[in-house]
Image 1 (cartoon, one colour):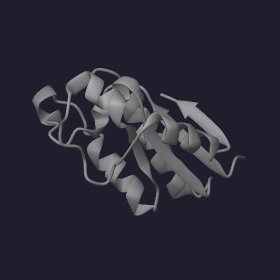
Image 2 (cartoon, one colour; image 1 turned 30 degrees about the horizontal axis):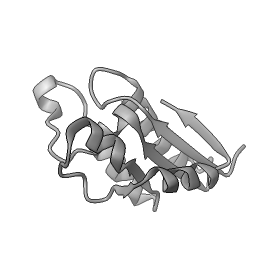
Image 3 (cartoon, one colour; image 1 turned 180 degrees about the vertical axis):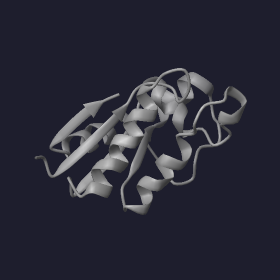
Image 4 (cartoon, rainbow, N blue to C red; image 1 turned 90 degrees about the vertical axis):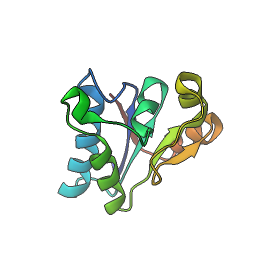
Length: 119
């Protein structure tokens, strides 16, 4: 088993199961003790998960915001590629616990983990 895993989320928070499943995988891996380190990286349409003004109740969907926040309870990092988010929605308020990074830093984050899984 890998000692570190990066969950790469590429899908938006609503309308697809992938973002929901990816955040729960990260939490499950951490809470079960199966890995020492688990981080989440939001890229492409997955960066929409970082927007602070989401209203999941408007679309009657469960929120990924709480699960992403719960990752920090395990001292895990949640990263978002700023240029991908800005390309989609411009300059918006993001969840305060998410670390906004550029693609150069994202490549370093990818290299820091033994295993990467994509949602």
